[in-house]
Image (cartoon, rainbow, N blue to C red; front, side, top):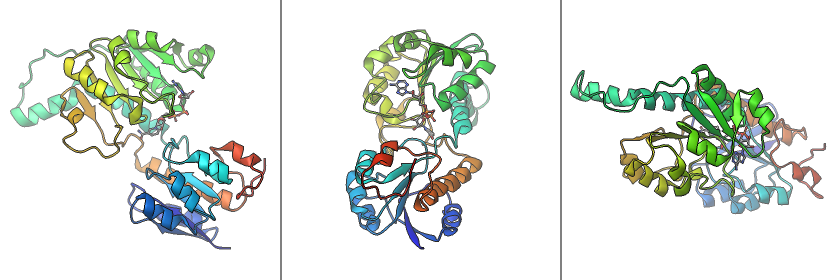
Length: 333
Ligand code: NAD
């Protein structure tokens, strides 16, 4: 049997690890030259599976994929895939939810420590203006005993909590789907969103992007935060209203922000938020380590290979597809 799997995009050096996994079941890769909707829709027509990283696998692309039985996300969030369309057509969607929990939680602590210890600021000033070029007038906190608010207490939120506890933080958690007992077992105190925002010195976002969480942090929420609070987002850009954040950072109504993700996945260098001195930014790299990416490539390809062979994948996103009256996949519960 031979299969074709479309790779819409990837951000690592090569697709050899996924090629090797899929070759074992006789599947060949078709790598898209760009992630434009028309390009993907044209290439999707005769493939059996799709692997996607950040490219938008829209309703149009999914409908064009007439033979496709599985769409695999290289990663955690599936907000770039028209999952409802896939479910309607009987196409399975898979993901790899836990390949970079260590990396993202390290990145959160990295942004937090960089900001609080002003490591990037001191590094730039020593190299640009010499030793002793910055007066010690800025607010640097002793972290022990400070409060960290974790919004979204899932895999990554809990890993951040574990690391923060080692620094002596008092951890608050807000998650409408996690019980107070579960939060307490992890060492956090479950509170409502307003209490978390008002009481935390650092706030870090770890919820998925859904219609409910879009603009989770807007002007009203920023207004509730402490004047020297630091807001971290290593989840998804649209969780924050960036116009409101720009105003808050410029007016100094919060201390600063550390973002690994922005609303626009490819912001222009003159985007006004990027000009602010109290913003630390990294280009959506929190997931990255050589180990994480190799694991991601192999597991994402393994999920697609499983569905192509009629085997249940480890992480099926759209479980209702199992009840589809006329599914394209051959999975059964
Ligand atoms: P997870 O599913 O384990 O946890 C998400 C948590 O958010 C769940 O506990 C859920 O109950 C909670 N949640 C849902 N709606 C909420 C709401 N309205 N308010 C507060 N909490 C809510 O996911 P995870 O693995 O911890 O990933 C979290 C986020 O990190 C996702 O958005 C993912 O896309 C993002 N992520 C980013 C990177 C990166 O490189 N920057 C890498 C991996 C994951």
